[in-house]
Length: 192
Image: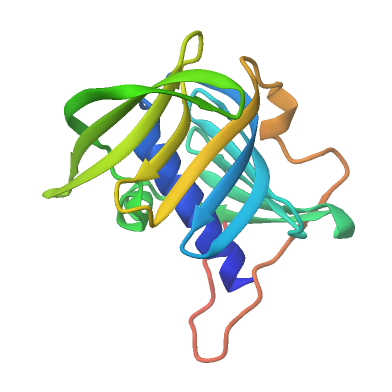
């Protein structure tokens, strides 16, 4: 389970580095590489709403800043956990707004069948500067690939659709809300 949360955090970080804030709508399959691990899944965004599901995981995550909630949906149990979405926590988790400092065209490459221009992009966040590569394909608002310059992580999108159904960002009808299990020695979570 911890691996799943780490992977979701990596995906969110890659999206935060790659995408302009809250202006997109798309759905796509994705390949996420972090170190020696590789996972596949799918993701969708519409405005500030985001959904991520990794292949082989028993749950998927829907982030709804507009409702100040994050849902972890578990289809096998027909249930979901609801957690408060705190924008300040999102910033601490690596989703701070990124300010692009520079962008330099390096060349052209084909990524997953998409002819793309490769850029080296420098972004600054929370006082730190980071360099990433982005591959931008004509006709898409998202990079078809984003990667750390040092190769430590990458996110690739394929089978990109320019729309995402509203239903992707809602808990399915008939699912039961689960309570967050109490941890020994921890105070009870406040109810909403």
